[in-house]
Image 1 (cartoon, rainbow, N blue to C red):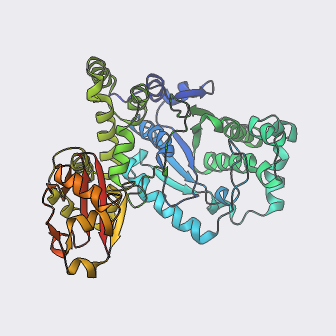
Image 2: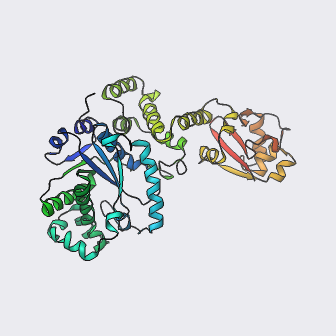
Image 3: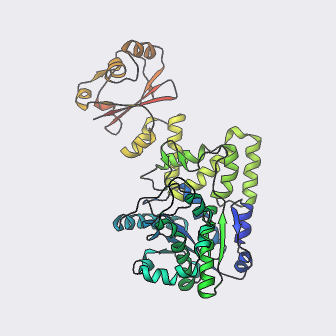
Amino acid sequence: MDKMNFVEELRWRGMLHDIMPGTEELLKKGMASGYIGFDPTADSLHVGSLAQIMTLIHFQRAGHKPFALVGGATGMVGDPSGKSQERNLLSEDVLQLNLSGIQKQLEKFLDFDCGANSAQMVNNYDWFKNFTFLDFIREVGKHITVNYMMAKDSVKNRINGDTGMSFTEFTYQLVQGYDFYYLWKHYQCVLQMGGSDQWGNIVTGTELIRRKDAGEAYALTTQLIKKSDGAKFGKSEGGNIWLDPEKTSPYKFYQFWLNTSDEDAKTYIRIFTLFDRETIEMLEGEHNVAPHLRTLQKALAKDITIRTHGEVEYEKAIKSSEFLFGNTGIEFLNELNEAETLALFEGVPNFKVALSELAESINIVDLLGAKTAVFPSKGEAKKMIQGGGVAINKTKADALEAIFNASNLINDKFIVVQKGKKNYFLIIAE
């Protein structure tokens, strides 16, 4: 089959930002190697890294060889681009842990075993750990002028800002530049890619290759992902949306994409899925006719949840949504473990009840109006129960004399209370 044109693919998807002249011609000549750097400050990537992962996926699908560079060395320094303050330096043990977590995730998206253009992971700590300071300033420092480094926006903004810039951070672009040089020399990597805030650092690498070895290398950057309302992409009220299911449950991950605004969904479906142009235009057409059905959001959330977490977790995420918003029975909770149950009810008011008290049975009015604060008072609880507005474990509770004990616990731990249809409360027996 004809391999797609990588740059064209990025262009129609709205991902391309800047490209160095000659890059497109180079990629048309045949298989090329290119890389993107990933920051190992945590043991998981988050959705903010997905645009870069997608860039590497398209690169590989176009027949090229993708390298994922994890910055074991640069993680010890910290990149000043777009940051207003210096970062904490990581210890070697923490870095090792982070690197193995990131590799596991990248293996879900890239093919590390497909012959000539298999993906490869490299760690810049391997070539920096024995590089002495004297060697570095002789081999790298003398090729790049301070004037050249000072002209970079990432440097200018910090030097003129309130906090200034340490020498450590000032040297960052030389360190990243040397990465490119090293990969160019030892792995024939001719292209570095990254978000548009990386342009200055990437070009320093091409400059070093030119000045040091009269070599040619290229640069390409992608658009930084923004939300149409100006808010930062990839964050929810609870912080980052991680790719690790232990840090962000697949249900919450699915909901994050499902809750995308219509305007953002049109952008994201191009960037974060592998649907072809025809499919996307068809989905957009369906969406425009009936936006309330959220066709784009559902297609986006499904595609990306399956690629990140697999089919089984996607099905569970759908059932979880149906459980909270629809008519799925209480039995569904038996399929979830404790962590998944708590993740499902994250943000729902929860109350603790002693197991010993439940063993002796508790009357429904006491349970909801005294032992817990589902209702502000027993009187309020009575009124709502009599009015038929209360369900316990998805069953309507309208008898004031009903009693509850340990046999009513789901997974020996939980009682689910609903006030009306939408207001959930979780009672946890301990």
